[in-house]
Image 1: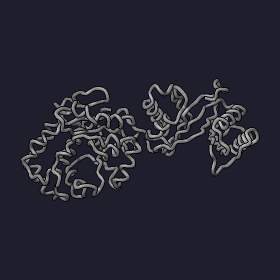
Image 2 (image 1 turned 180 degrees about the vertical axis):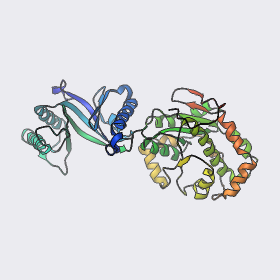
Image 3 (image 1 turned 135 degrees about the vertical axis):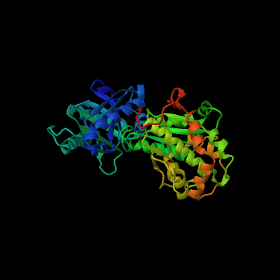
Image 4 (image 1 turned 60 degrees about the vertical axis):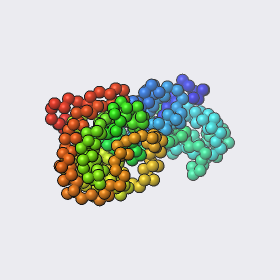
Length: 407
Protein backbone atom coordinates (compact mmCIF):
# COMPACT_ATOMS: atom_id res chain seq x y z
CA UNK A 1 0.00 0.00 0.00
CA UNK A 2 1.09 3.59 -0.54
CA UNK A 3 2.45 4.39 2.91
CA UNK A 4 2.18 8.18 2.72
CA UNK A 5 -1.56 8.19 2.12
CA UNK A 6 -2.78 5.09 3.97
CA UNK A 7 -5.52 7.02 5.81
CA UNK A 8 -6.99 8.40 2.57
CA UNK A 9 -6.15 5.67 0.06
CA UNK A 10 -7.41 2.11 0.29
CA UNK A 11 -6.12 -0.80 -1.78
CA UNK A 12 -8.90 -2.32 -3.86
CA UNK A 13 -9.85 -4.44 -6.80
CA UNK A 14 -11.99 -2.52 -9.27
CA UNK A 15 -14.30 -4.85 -11.18
CA UNK A 16 -15.87 -3.91 -14.50
CA UNK A 17 -18.91 -5.90 -15.58
CA UNK A 18 -19.49 -7.51 -18.96
CA UNK A 19 -22.90 -7.64 -20.66
CA UNK A 20 -24.78 -6.27 -17.67
CA UNK A 21 -24.76 -2.71 -19.01
CA UNK A 22 -26.88 -3.87 -21.96
CA UNK A 23 -29.62 -5.48 -19.91
CA UNK A 24 -31.90 -2.55 -19.10
CA UNK A 25 -34.22 -3.30 -16.19
CA UNK A 26 -32.13 -6.27 -15.08
CA UNK A 27 -28.97 -4.22 -14.71
CA UNK A 28 -29.08 -3.38 -11.01
CA UNK A 29 -30.35 -6.79 -9.99
CA UNK A 30 -27.58 -8.53 -11.90
CA UNK A 31 -24.95 -6.13 -10.57
CA UNK A 32 -26.02 -7.03 -7.04
CA UNK A 33 -25.95 -10.72 -7.98
CA UNK A 34 -22.41 -10.45 -9.34
CA UNK A 35 -21.28 -8.59 -6.23
CA UNK A 36 -22.78 -11.39 -4.13
CA UNK A 37 -21.03 -14.05 -6.22
CA UNK A 38 -17.69 -12.28 -5.84
CA UNK A 39 -18.20 -11.97 -2.09
CA UNK A 40 -19.09 -15.68 -1.77
CA UNK A 41 -16.06 -16.71 -3.84
CA UNK A 42 -13.57 -14.64 -1.84
CA UNK A 43 -15.10 -15.22 1.58
CA UNK A 44 -12.97 -13.80 4.40
CA UNK A 45 -10.29 -12.65 1.97
CA UNK A 46 -12.49 -9.65 1.16
CA UNK A 47 -13.40 -7.35 4.04
CA UNK A 48 -16.09 -5.67 1.94
CA UNK A 49 -17.63 -5.77 -1.55
CA UNK A 50 -19.51 -2.66 -2.69
CA UNK A 51 -21.32 -1.35 -5.77
CA UNK A 52 -20.12 1.95 -7.16
CA UNK A 53 -22.30 2.90 -10.12
CA UNK A 54 -21.25 0.46 -12.88
CA UNK A 55 -18.27 -0.83 -10.88
CA UNK A 56 -17.89 -3.37 -8.10
CA UNK A 57 -15.23 -2.51 -5.54
CA UNK A 58 -13.55 -5.30 -3.60
CA UNK A 59 -11.67 -4.31 -0.45
CA UNK A 60 -9.30 -7.18 0.33
CA UNK A 61 -8.20 -8.01 3.84
CA UNK A 62 -4.64 -7.20 2.76
CA UNK A 63 -2.89 -5.60 -0.22
CA UNK A 64 -4.82 -6.04 -3.48
CA UNK A 65 -2.62 -8.44 -5.42
CA UNK A 66 -2.56 -10.16 -8.78
CA UNK A 67 -3.42 -13.62 -7.43
CA UNK A 68 -6.68 -12.39 -5.92
CA UNK A 69 -7.45 -10.38 -9.07
CA UNK A 70 -6.98 -13.44 -11.28
CA UNK A 71 -9.37 -15.41 -9.11
CA UNK A 72 -12.01 -12.70 -9.51
CA UNK A 73 -11.35 -12.47 -13.25
CA UNK A 74 -12.69 -15.99 -13.91
CA UNK A 75 -16.01 -15.33 -12.13
CA UNK A 76 -18.73 -15.21 -14.82
CA UNK A 77 -19.93 -11.67 -15.47
CA UNK A 78 -16.54 -10.00 -14.95
CA UNK A 79 -15.18 -8.00 -17.90
CA UNK A 80 -11.90 -6.99 -16.30
CA UNK A 81 -10.35 -6.54 -12.85
CA UNK A 82 -8.22 -3.53 -12.03
CA UNK A 83 -5.63 -3.65 -9.26
CA UNK A 84 -5.38 -0.30 -7.56
CA UNK A 85 -6.88 2.10 -5.04
CA UNK A 86 -10.00 3.94 -3.92
CA UNK A 87 -9.29 7.47 -2.66
CA UNK A 88 -11.02 10.66 -1.65
CA UNK A 89 -11.99 12.89 -4.56
CA UNK A 90 -9.11 15.27 -4.01
CA UNK A 91 -7.21 16.17 -7.15
CA UNK A 92 -4.00 16.98 -5.32
CA UNK A 93 -4.18 13.58 -3.68
CA UNK A 94 -4.67 11.99 -7.10
CA UNK A 95 -1.54 13.71 -8.40
CA UNK A 96 0.54 12.66 -5.39
CA UNK A 97 -0.64 9.05 -5.48
CA UNK A 98 -0.02 8.81 -9.23
CA UNK A 99 3.48 10.17 -8.77
CA UNK A 100 4.34 7.80 -5.95
CA UNK A 101 2.88 4.85 -7.83
CA UNK A 102 4.93 5.49 -10.97
CA UNK A 103 8.04 5.98 -8.87
CA UNK A 104 7.48 2.66 -7.07
CA UNK A 105 7.02 0.78 -10.36
CA UNK A 106 10.13 2.31 -11.95
CA UNK A 107 8.36 3.03 -15.25
CA UNK A 108 9.93 5.44 -17.74
CA UNK A 109 6.98 5.55 -20.19
CA UNK A 110 3.48 6.00 -18.80
CA UNK A 111 -0.06 6.35 -20.20
CA UNK A 112 -2.87 8.02 -18.27
CA UNK A 113 -6.50 7.28 -19.13
CA UNK A 114 -9.42 9.00 -17.41
CA UNK A 115 -13.15 8.29 -17.38
CA UNK A 116 -15.53 10.84 -15.86
CA UNK A 117 -18.51 8.81 -14.63
CA UNK A 118 -19.72 11.78 -12.60
CA UNK A 119 -20.50 14.42 -15.24
CA UNK A 120 -20.93 17.10 -12.55
CA UNK A 121 -17.18 17.07 -11.88
CA UNK A 122 -15.93 20.51 -13.00
CA UNK A 123 -13.09 19.24 -15.18
CA UNK A 124 -13.33 17.06 -18.27
CA UNK A 125 -11.64 13.68 -18.59
CA UNK A 126 -9.12 15.18 -21.00
CA UNK A 127 -8.24 17.99 -18.57
CA UNK A 128 -7.65 15.56 -15.69
CA UNK A 129 -5.57 13.31 -17.94
CA UNK A 130 -3.37 16.26 -18.97
CA UNK A 131 -2.89 17.43 -15.38
CA UNK A 132 -1.81 13.99 -14.17
CA UNK A 133 0.44 13.49 -17.20
CA UNK A 134 2.07 16.91 -16.80
CA UNK A 135 2.74 16.25 -13.11
CA UNK A 136 4.41 12.92 -13.87
CA UNK A 137 6.46 14.38 -16.71
CA UNK A 138 7.71 17.36 -14.71
CA UNK A 139 8.37 15.70 -11.35
CA UNK A 140 9.75 12.34 -12.50
CA UNK A 141 11.22 13.28 -15.89
CA UNK A 142 9.43 10.43 -17.62
CA UNK A 143 7.79 10.14 -21.01
CA UNK A 144 4.04 10.01 -21.68
CA UNK A 145 3.39 7.32 -24.28
CA UNK A 146 -0.21 6.33 -25.03
CA UNK A 147 0.73 3.64 -27.57
CA UNK A 148 3.51 1.62 -25.92
CA UNK A 149 3.60 2.48 -22.22
CA UNK A 150 5.41 0.46 -19.57
CA UNK A 151 2.67 1.37 -17.13
CA UNK A 152 -0.91 2.54 -17.64
CA UNK A 153 -2.87 4.43 -14.99
CA UNK A 154 -6.66 4.26 -15.30
CA UNK A 155 -8.67 6.85 -13.35
CA UNK A 156 -12.43 6.83 -12.89
CA UNK A 157 -14.14 9.90 -11.41
CA UNK A 158 -17.10 8.99 -9.20
CA UNK A 159 -19.34 11.37 -7.22
CA UNK A 160 -17.30 11.09 -4.02
CA UNK A 161 -14.20 9.12 -4.94
CA UNK A 162 -11.44 8.55 -7.46
CA UNK A 163 -10.77 5.00 -8.56
CA UNK A 164 -7.22 4.36 -9.74
CA UNK A 165 -5.96 1.14 -11.29
CA UNK A 166 -2.38 0.43 -12.33
CA UNK A 167 -2.96 -3.02 -13.81
CA UNK A 168 -5.90 -4.70 -15.53
CA UNK A 169 -6.59 -8.40 -15.91
CA UNK A 170 -9.12 -9.44 -18.53
CA UNK A 171 -12.15 -11.32 -17.25
CA UNK A 172 -14.19 -14.11 -18.81
CA UNK A 173 -17.27 -11.96 -19.51
CA UNK A 174 -20.76 -13.40 -19.63
CA UNK A 175 -23.50 -13.10 -17.04
CA UNK A 176 -23.40 -13.63 -13.27
CA UNK A 177 -24.32 -17.12 -12.10
CA UNK A 178 -27.98 -17.10 -11.07
CA UNK A 179 -29.15 -14.68 -13.76
CA UNK A 180 -30.47 -17.40 -16.08
CA UNK A 181 -32.00 -20.09 -13.85
CA UNK A 182 -30.94 -23.63 -13.08
CA UNK A 183 -29.71 -26.43 -15.37
CA UNK A 184 -28.43 -29.96 -14.77
CA UNK A 185 -25.13 -31.01 -16.36
CA UNK A 186 -24.02 -34.57 -16.98
CA UNK A 187 -20.58 -34.69 -15.36
CA UNK A 188 -18.19 -37.50 -16.27
CA UNK A 189 -14.58 -37.89 -15.21
CA UNK A 190 -13.30 -36.49 -18.52
CA UNK A 191 -12.24 -33.15 -19.97
CA UNK A 192 -15.33 -32.08 -21.91
CA UNK A 193 -18.23 -32.13 -19.46
CA UNK A 194 -16.68 -29.82 -16.81
CA UNK A 195 -15.95 -27.24 -19.53
CA UNK A 196 -19.53 -27.51 -20.79
CA UNK A 197 -20.80 -26.96 -17.24
CA UNK A 198 -18.60 -23.89 -16.82
CA UNK A 199 -19.76 -22.40 -20.13
CA UNK A 200 -23.35 -22.57 -18.89
CA UNK A 201 -22.26 -20.87 -15.68
CA UNK A 202 -20.81 -18.16 -17.90
CA UNK A 203 -24.26 -17.70 -19.42
CA UNK A 204 -25.67 -17.08 -15.94
CA UNK A 205 -26.92 -20.57 -15.03
CA UNK A 206 -26.74 -22.25 -11.66
CA UNK A 207 -25.35 -25.60 -12.78
CA UNK A 208 -26.10 -28.69 -10.76
CA UNK A 209 -24.29 -31.85 -11.86
CA UNK A 210 -25.25 -35.51 -12.19
CA UNK A 211 -22.51 -38.15 -12.06
CA UNK A 212 -23.12 -41.86 -12.57
CA UNK A 213 -20.44 -43.76 -10.69
CA UNK A 214 -19.01 -47.25 -11.18
CA UNK A 215 -17.59 -47.52 -7.64
CA UNK A 216 -19.45 -49.61 -5.02
CA UNK A 217 -20.62 -46.49 -3.13
CA UNK A 218 -21.17 -42.78 -3.69
CA UNK A 219 -18.70 -42.06 -0.90
CA UNK A 220 -16.14 -44.10 -2.83
CA UNK A 221 -16.68 -41.96 -5.92
CA UNK A 222 -16.20 -38.78 -3.90
CA UNK A 223 -12.95 -39.96 -2.34
CA UNK A 224 -11.47 -39.93 -5.84
CA UNK A 225 -11.22 -37.06 -8.28
CA UNK A 226 -14.95 -36.30 -8.65
CA UNK A 227 -15.04 -34.37 -5.40
CA UNK A 228 -12.01 -32.30 -6.41
CA UNK A 229 -13.48 -31.65 -9.86
CA UNK A 230 -16.89 -30.66 -8.54
CA UNK A 231 -15.44 -28.39 -5.87
CA UNK A 232 -13.33 -26.66 -8.49
CA UNK A 233 -16.48 -25.99 -10.54
CA UNK A 234 -18.35 -24.95 -7.42
CA UNK A 235 -15.93 -22.08 -6.93
CA UNK A 236 -17.80 -20.39 -9.78
CA UNK A 237 -21.30 -21.37 -8.58
CA UNK A 238 -21.60 -21.72 -4.81
CA UNK A 239 -25.21 -22.92 -5.00
CA UNK A 240 -24.38 -25.89 -7.24
CA UNK A 241 -24.96 -29.45 -6.03
CA UNK A 242 -23.65 -32.80 -7.19
CA UNK A 243 -26.07 -35.71 -7.61
CA UNK A 244 -24.47 -39.16 -7.50
CA UNK A 245 -26.22 -42.14 -9.09
CA UNK A 246 -25.13 -45.80 -9.21
CA UNK A 247 -24.39 -47.62 -12.47
CA UNK A 248 -25.25 -51.18 -11.47
CA UNK A 249 -28.98 -51.16 -12.30
CA UNK A 250 -28.24 -50.27 -15.89
CA UNK A 251 -25.35 -52.72 -16.08
CA UNK A 252 -27.41 -55.66 -14.85
CA UNK A 253 -29.96 -55.23 -17.64
CA UNK A 254 -27.71 -54.16 -20.51
CA UNK A 255 -25.49 -57.25 -20.11
CA UNK A 256 -28.36 -59.23 -21.64
CA UNK A 257 -28.45 -57.04 -24.76
CA UNK A 258 -26.65 -56.33 -28.02
CA UNK A 259 -23.20 -55.10 -26.99
CA UNK A 260 -22.88 -53.03 -30.18
CA UNK A 261 -25.73 -50.81 -28.91
CA UNK A 262 -24.46 -50.60 -25.34
CA UNK A 263 -23.02 -47.10 -25.69
CA UNK A 264 -26.14 -45.69 -27.35
CA UNK A 265 -28.30 -47.24 -24.64
CA UNK A 266 -26.07 -45.88 -21.88
CA UNK A 267 -26.25 -42.39 -23.32
CA UNK A 268 -30.03 -42.62 -23.42
CA UNK A 269 -30.03 -43.92 -19.85
CA UNK A 270 -28.00 -40.88 -18.75
CA UNK A 271 -30.37 -38.48 -20.47
CA UNK A 272 -33.53 -40.12 -19.11
CA UNK A 273 -32.05 -40.16 -15.61
CA UNK A 274 -30.98 -36.54 -15.91
CA UNK A 275 -34.42 -35.48 -17.10
CA UNK A 276 -36.10 -37.08 -14.09
CA UNK A 277 -33.69 -35.39 -11.68
CA UNK A 278 -33.91 -32.05 -13.52
CA UNK A 279 -37.69 -31.97 -13.27
CA UNK A 280 -37.51 -32.56 -9.54
CA UNK A 281 -34.99 -29.81 -8.81
CA UNK A 282 -36.53 -27.21 -11.11
CA UNK A 283 -33.81 -27.33 -13.76
CA UNK A 284 -35.10 -26.29 -17.17
CA UNK A 285 -32.45 -27.96 -19.32
CA UNK A 286 -29.91 -30.78 -19.44
CA UNK A 287 -26.29 -29.92 -20.34
CA UNK A 288 -23.91 -32.35 -22.04
CA UNK A 289 -20.30 -32.18 -23.22
CA UNK A 290 -21.09 -33.35 -26.77
CA UNK A 291 -18.81 -32.08 -29.55
CA UNK A 292 -20.15 -33.14 -32.92
CA UNK A 293 -18.21 -36.01 -34.49
CA UNK A 294 -15.54 -36.15 -31.77
CA UNK A 295 -16.38 -39.74 -30.77
CA UNK A 296 -18.69 -42.59 -31.71
CA UNK A 297 -21.18 -41.37 -29.11
CA UNK A 298 -21.23 -37.90 -30.67
CA UNK A 299 -22.29 -38.53 -34.25
CA UNK A 300 -25.60 -36.97 -35.23
CA UNK A 301 -27.19 -40.42 -35.22
CA UNK A 302 -25.90 -41.21 -31.72
CA UNK A 303 -26.95 -37.83 -30.31
CA UNK A 304 -30.41 -38.21 -31.87
CA UNK A 305 -30.91 -41.73 -30.51
CA UNK A 306 -29.69 -40.74 -27.03
CA UNK A 307 -31.98 -37.70 -26.68
CA UNK A 308 -35.03 -39.15 -28.46
CA UNK A 309 -38.21 -38.83 -26.41
CA UNK A 310 -36.94 -36.24 -23.93
CA UNK A 311 -39.28 -33.44 -22.86
CA UNK A 312 -36.59 -31.08 -21.58
CA UNK A 313 -34.23 -29.26 -23.89
CA UNK A 314 -30.61 -30.45 -24.11
CA UNK A 315 -27.92 -27.75 -24.27
CA UNK A 316 -24.58 -28.67 -25.88
CA UNK A 317 -22.23 -25.67 -25.49
CA UNK A 318 -19.23 -27.57 -26.98
CA UNK A 319 -21.05 -28.83 -30.07
CA UNK A 320 -18.98 -26.81 -32.57
CA UNK A 321 -15.65 -26.86 -30.73
CA UNK A 322 -12.70 -29.12 -31.51
CA UNK A 323 -10.72 -30.97 -28.86
CA UNK A 324 -7.83 -28.51 -28.81
CA UNK A 325 -10.19 -25.61 -28.07
CA UNK A 326 -11.79 -27.54 -25.22
CA UNK A 327 -8.42 -28.57 -23.76
CA UNK A 328 -7.11 -25.00 -23.88
CA UNK A 329 -10.20 -23.70 -22.11
CA UNK A 330 -9.97 -26.50 -19.54
CA UNK A 331 -6.37 -25.53 -18.79
CA UNK A 332 -7.21 -21.83 -18.45
CA UNK A 333 -9.91 -22.67 -15.88
CA UNK A 334 -7.65 -24.93 -13.82
CA UNK A 335 -9.76 -27.98 -14.69
CA UNK A 336 -7.41 -29.90 -16.99
CA UNK A 337 -5.04 -31.41 -14.42
CA UNK A 338 -8.01 -32.61 -12.37
CA UNK A 339 -9.84 -33.97 -15.42
CA UNK A 340 -6.83 -36.02 -16.48
CA UNK A 341 -6.35 -37.64 -13.08
CA UNK A 342 -6.80 -41.41 -13.17
CA UNK A 343 -10.37 -42.45 -12.47
CA UNK A 344 -12.49 -45.46 -13.41
CA UNK A 345 -15.73 -44.01 -14.71
CA UNK A 346 -18.59 -45.76 -16.50
CA UNK A 347 -17.26 -44.89 -19.94
CA UNK A 348 -14.20 -47.06 -19.25
CA UNK A 349 -16.48 -50.08 -18.83
CA UNK A 350 -18.59 -49.56 -21.96
CA UNK A 351 -17.68 -51.60 -25.06
CA UNK A 352 -14.68 -50.17 -26.95
CA UNK A 353 -16.04 -50.47 -30.51
CA UNK A 354 -19.72 -49.47 -30.57
CA UNK A 355 -21.82 -48.77 -33.65
CA UNK A 356 -20.91 -45.15 -34.51
CA UNK A 357 -24.22 -44.43 -36.27
CA UNK A 358 -26.90 -46.49 -34.52
CA UNK A 359 -30.35 -46.62 -36.09
CA UNK A 360 -33.03 -45.06 -33.90
CA UNK A 361 -35.36 -48.01 -34.50
CA UNK A 362 -32.73 -50.47 -33.26
CA UNK A 363 -32.03 -48.44 -30.13
CA UNK A 364 -35.75 -48.08 -29.38
CA UNK A 365 -36.35 -51.82 -29.77
CA UNK A 366 -33.41 -52.77 -27.56
CA UNK A 367 -34.40 -50.21 -24.93
CA UNK A 368 -37.91 -51.68 -24.73
CA UNK A 369 -36.71 -55.31 -24.87
CA UNK A 370 -34.34 -54.79 -21.94
CA UNK A 371 -36.92 -52.73 -19.99
CA UNK A 372 -34.34 -50.02 -19.32
CA UNK A 373 -36.98 -47.62 -18.04
CA UNK A 374 -36.93 -49.86 -14.97
CA UNK A 375 -33.18 -49.23 -14.59
CA UNK A 376 -33.90 -45.50 -14.57
CA UNK A 377 -36.57 -45.84 -11.88
CA UNK A 378 -34.46 -48.10 -9.67
CA UNK A 379 -31.44 -45.83 -9.99
CA UNK A 380 -33.50 -42.79 -8.96
CA UNK A 381 -34.20 -44.45 -5.62
CA UNK A 382 -30.48 -44.62 -4.78
CA UNK A 383 -29.33 -41.14 -5.77
CA UNK A 384 -27.60 -39.03 -3.13
CA UNK A 385 -26.69 -35.34 -3.25
CA UNK A 386 -23.44 -33.66 -2.22
CA UNK A 387 -23.69 -29.95 -1.38
CA UNK A 388 -19.98 -29.34 -0.90
CA UNK A 389 -20.10 -30.46 2.72
CA UNK A 390 -22.42 -33.40 3.28
CA UNK A 391 -23.85 -36.38 1.38
CA UNK A 392 -27.57 -37.06 1.88
CA UNK A 393 -30.48 -38.82 0.13
CA UNK A 394 -31.60 -36.41 -2.54
CA UNK A 395 -35.39 -36.56 -2.02
CA UNK A 396 -38.46 -38.53 -1.11
CA UNK A 397 -39.49 -40.28 -4.31
CA UNK A 398 -42.91 -41.31 -3.00
CA UNK A 399 -44.45 -38.40 -4.91
CA UNK A 400 -44.38 -37.94 -8.70
CA UNK A 401 -41.85 -35.60 -10.35
CA UNK A 402 -42.80 -31.94 -10.71
CA UNK A 403 -41.33 -28.83 -12.26
CA UNK A 404 -41.46 -26.81 -9.05
CA UNK A 405 -38.29 -24.81 -8.49
CA UNK A 406 -36.61 -25.85 -5.26
CA UNK A 407 -34.04 -23.06 -5.47
